[in-house]
Length: 100
Image (cartoon, rainbow, N blue to C red; front, side):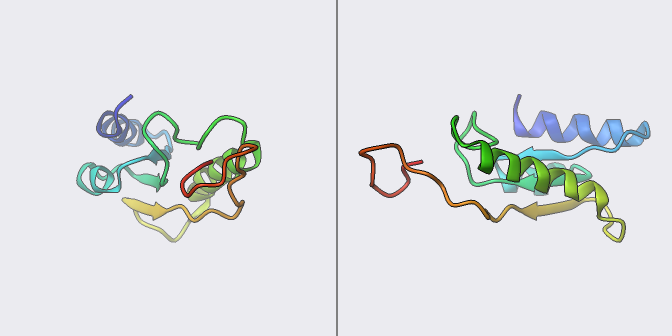
């Protein structure tokens, strides 16, 4: 689903009383659409939780997104940049930059 559509759906759900968090691949879209809570991640399209086979990193993204629901002092829209706390693993034999 596209970043813009997800942000618009989240905003409508919030108007209906359902708390939401979106994981956004494109920060500029989140800033324009203004979903109530957005976690911006630096991953390629189609991989909002990073590459397959990285469960620690994927869990870290999910936990960061859910933590936005606990931000009692923040006023929507809340757009946060995700900072990795789990270093990416490289596939065996791969050592170039950007390899995950």
